[in-house]
Every structure is written in structure tokens, then in C-alpha cells.
Length: 166
Image (cartoon, rainbow, N blue to C red; front, side, top):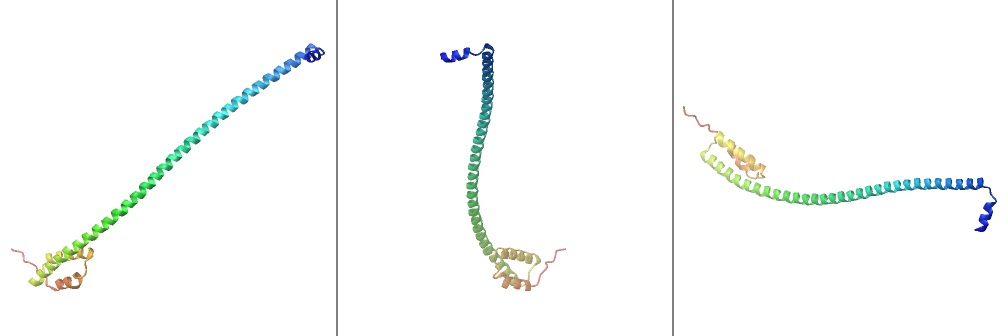
């Protein structure tokens, strides 16, 4: 340490003050530079932290949406299955209903046919009823005896118009 003090004695006061002033200016500049870098790093960190927070929020929202989508897919699959079951039940019910309709209307068509052939004529109202029942009978799936026997025989009968009283 003595050697440093001895070497400083060889310099004049202006040089020493110049060096001290230069070093203090250098330290001041470095301090300002470090402060500026510190504030920039702090802003960068905060910005990055904000982006990380946003990224985390987006990821959480995405996971929530994916979970909701999966729930909706399961619901859609269950609904699809339920609709298929309902469709099968409806088709079964329609088939049974058509069988009942065919049976009931076949009986009605036979009864009307026997009534018309027994009286040897048909009235316009009776013919209209017979054809309407025959149409529903065919739409329900019955066609075996109606077109082959009953309808041709009823259509061969004369139409008897009832006279209106005066």
C-alpha cells in the first residue's frame, strides 16, 4: 500500500483530481447503465410473466373447452343411441299398428262385401266407404284379398241411388 501512495506522490494534484473525476464519472455512468438495465430487465420479466400468465390462462381455458367438447361428444353418442332405440320402438309400434289396421279393415271389407253382394247392389256412400277403407288397408300393407277378390266383385255390382223423399 505504501508503494501506491509513494507512486501517487509523483503525480501532481490536477492529474489526481482528473483521475478521481474520471473514475467518479465512470462509476456514475455505470450506475445509471446498471439501473437502466435493471428497469429494462424488470419490465421484460413482468412482460414475460404476464405472457406466461396469459399462456397459462389460455392453456387452462383450452383444457376446459376440450373437457366440455368431450362431454358433448359423450352426450351426442348417448343421444344417438337413444334416438336409434326410439326409432326401433316406433318402427315396431308402426308394424304392430299396421297389422292391427290390416286385420280390422280386412274384417270390415269382408263385412261390407258380404252386405253388398247379399243385397246385390251398392250405394254411392257405401262404395265410397269401401274404397276409403280399401285404400287405408293397402297403405297399411294389406293387398292380398282386396285387389284380387273383394274390390272387383263390389265394383261389378250396380250402384243404387236412393231416391230422396219429396
